[in-house]
Structure formats: C-alpha cells, structure tokens
Length: 110
Image 1 (cartoon, helix red, strand yellow):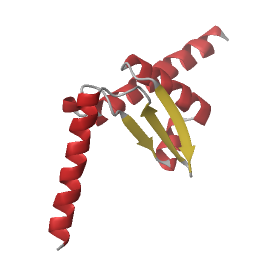
Image 2: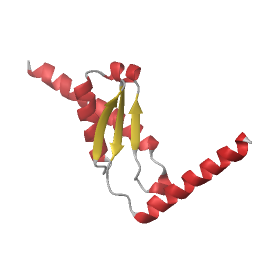
Image 3: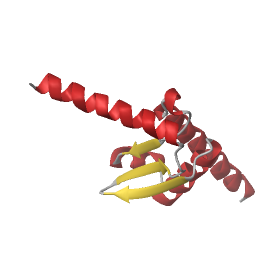
C-alpha cells in the first residue's frame, strides 16, 4: 500500500507543479506578481482528476507564488484567484491599462 501512496503523492506534486507553471504564465511582470488568476475549463478539469484534489493543488501552487489563493467553481469552470491586497501603485497601473484597452476597443469599433 505505501507504493500506492507514494505514487499518489508524486502525481499530486506533479499537478501542483503544472498548475504553478500555468499560474506563473498568467502573471504580467509589470504587476509584480499581483492580479494573478487562472481559469480551468470543464474539459481541463476532467483531465486533471478529482475536483477536490485540483482545488487543493491550485491553492498550494498559489501559495508557492506568494498568493493568497482562493478557488471558485462557476458553471463547470474553476477560477483560481489571488486575494491579496494590491498596492496602490499597482492598482493604478492596472486601472490605466484597463482604461487604455477600453478606449482602444471603442476607437476600433467606430
């Protein structure tokens, strides 16, 4: 039985590593690690295994990145978000980027 536990442990660590890599990829360098998030669709979740294990692994992966991770399941999609308080200068930078994107979309729509 210990071999099975060891195998399950290795699978879990591999899942944590994979999720951490996906989360790291979603980060924008200019936000210095803040505003992290990951959205996993139904098909991806099914491929990864049991939902409770994926949620636990996602929270652990987030903690490795310094996040205050939270998971939410909405209509078959798993959202993993960083709930840390964002410093004002990063919040302002993100707000400016969002405003620019909205302005650009409006100009292109006309």
